Image 1 (cartoon, one colour):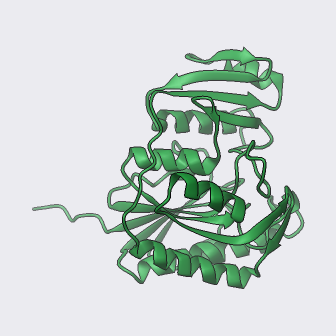
Image 2: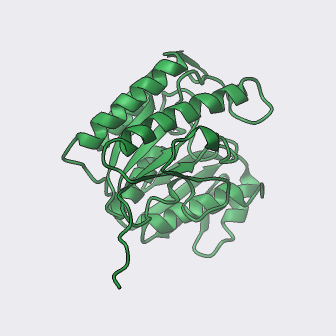
Length: 279
């Protein structure tokens, strides 16, 4: 008997810094000012994109919660037909689930600029408390760029990125066919001009609908091999990273290694983001 083919699936990677209404680090972690409200805003934007997909040809939406403790999204406020990936650690981090059978497109919700972007509210790359910069082949990279490169490697296009206007401008430079949706405008590192959260969810849903029906779809492919160099906040972390097989300490606060695939690189950045603190 032939096996049942997987449903057509959309993958969503969700972060919080680029959500409408979010402007300060005091909103980003449990127990802090407005965190519970901010996670509700985040859930509403993700749910809006998921509904657009489920109402327009997708049988299932895989959602990877990729912010903080990865337990921000409120499961009971997501539509039926979604599968939520929560908590750490997991091999592909913010892209866990993107390689599941049937996934034919990715959406990034609530994204932000990279650590050395020069602009972007709450800009950082992977872990602002550990990493000052993440460079691949000598170029400082945002999470969006690296995750899109992994998506390109597995042949899955990124069709929509949402966040502030800074990350939308960046993404348009290397994913010209992708839809972008700015729910707020950058003023300073912790200051924005934002639409209301309810409006943010509505325009994200509309952008998701546009993205689902757009073509062609560019795949981002960075040239291999991939030399990853991380500038750590603390010298001790660089020293410890330099002890790992394949790594070398390249400066007081930096360590580097070379990888044949973006998958291997992504697994290592996830390890380095989680191992030093273990929570």
